[in-house]
Length: 419
Image 1: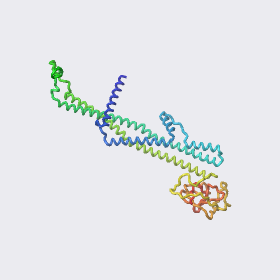
Image 2: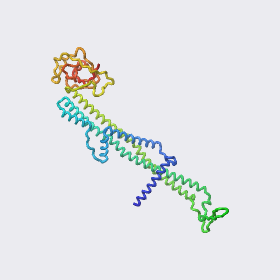
Image 3: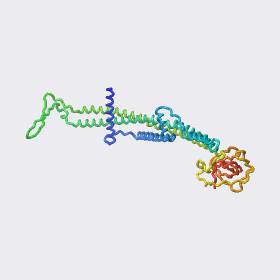
Image 4: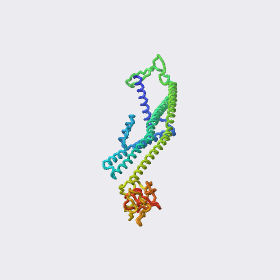
């Protein structure tokens, strides 16, 4: 216990001395050993890497989990070294609500069937989101956290040690400077002040007319010199200060080299983060591609549903072309004769026998690709122009489309009618 208290007192004294020296450096009252320009650049790059890594990490966490309460919960589980419980995604929760609504409102009604189909798609989207969050956390967030909690803590520790070594070095330089100044001053003092008898006795006698007067009286017993520092003592002090300076310089150089190697390792950190960034982009691309595929399949399925309501011909997603012609809500022309057509859903249309109306056909722009489900449908390519018209008794969500000598049914939701 006694040893620990002594060590604590010694450390406190060193800390106080360094704090005073650091303050004097800030105010320009003490000399400071400057690092070379390359070392300063390494320090600046390391600080910048740390700051931006923190910002990217925090914002990526917000992207993957927008709910702050959920983020706090995950953080606590991580600190407690416990597995984070599985959480239902928003898409999966929406899918469950839609499925429950379809069961209650009637799964055989057009609305109920549509709710079931959309619920299936939302469930697939939720599963894709879960996979994306898991992959991004492992391939991107974990390496960033490992850098901040591992490599950066090591760099910060070595930088603090380097700062202490520099303060010790500057303190040794200051002591050596003072010792040399005292040595130079001692050599200029006259010899009699250095060899003056030791046992001088000061005696004072008061005089009424002259006031107080101090006299020097010498004892005949000894004539030892005064204990004033001699040039030899100052030489020893200078030698001791130089030895301490050499030791401090060696420790400073060794610590500077260790810190430099760690700072130069930031380049390897950048390479590692670059690889992780590519993995993050890959996982995000896969996620959005899955979402696009699921929604495209859903749109095709809804387009085949009889009685599906389409209130507008505008697409759910932005058109591929930058400028789109004006759309109109005018009704399509109807062919007066439909003797050769079978009712929708009962048999295939005899498209070869269908003749377009004499007048009133319209042009339409295809919004995105469409694959024909059977021979009665017409495959479409995005941005192409086709001729469309309606037939009596057809499902209002479908039109007859013609492109050259080919014709077939096309879904209205994939078209933009041109005026």
